[in-house]
Amino acid sequence: MSKIVDAETAVASIADGSVGVIGWVTPDALLRALGERFRKTAGPRDLTFYFPVGTGDAQGIKGMDHVAQEGLMKRIVSGSYINPVDPLTGRRPELMR
Image (cartoon, rainbow, N blue to C red):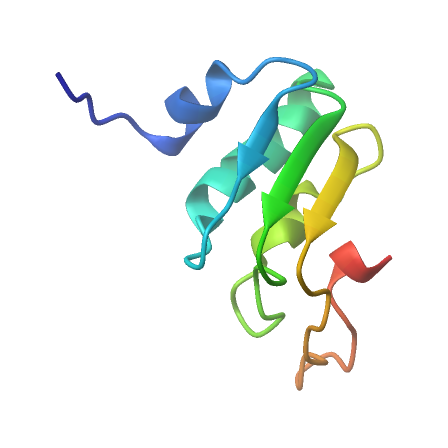
C-alpha cells in the first residue's frame, strides 16, 4: 500500500543519525522541509547523505543547501562537489562551505 503525504509529513519521521541516498533527481521540496524542520526543532541531527553528484545547481534549485546546516549534517559521501557559481549572486552553493 502506498501513501502520498506532503513534504513536512515525509521528513517528520527522520530520526537522528539516519542515512539517506539521493539519486540523480534533486528532491528539493523534501530537502527544504528537512532544513526547515531542523531550524524549528534542532532535529534531526547528525545525518549522513550519499549522492552521486552535487545536488542543486545554485540557479533556482537549492538542493543540498537546504540542509547545509551545522548539526544537521554529520557526513557527506559524494561523487562530485563541482557546482557552478550562481550567475545572480556570484556565490557557490552553501554545501561547498
